[in-house]
Length: 198
Image 1: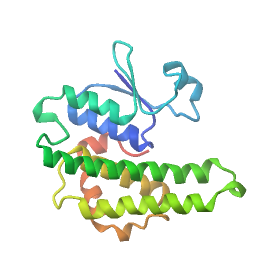
Image 2: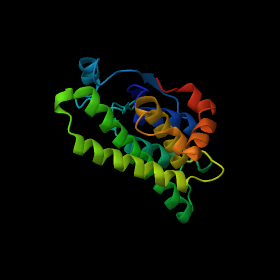
Image 3: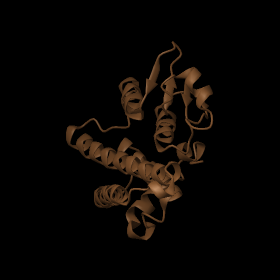
């Protein structure tokens, strides 16, 4: 089984960390959708990261779909989503907010790194930045006081690390002390340390 994609993608990194926590053995193949496009396309013509290549040749794409598959397979002791409905809803809320923050962070990075400066669309950037700050504002309020290794809490930490690495000037760390503390704690976990943001 191979996980294809770069760990500087929050989506690839959340899958790698989750698979580690599920106890799933896999090989990580660090291919970029940009610099190694041709090599990636030979594995998956769609060139979407993350891609998980199962042993039978099945291609799974999109971090949510990959993790849904392994959450189904995981024994109760290794599941990352709470099983009780109310707790699960709260964790899904955290996961959704964290994924929205990832998406908006990626949009800002792409806007600055892929579009020529004279083509930047400031109203679009303002809108996306507002959505990003709103997602982190809600996460700051909703994070539990004591983080546990649920999908919501780990995705929030992965998202925050990505945002701070790529666009710290847009999202000021000092405005989100709980997120900072939460992420600093989870980044010390062996699964996070094994798959560091690159």
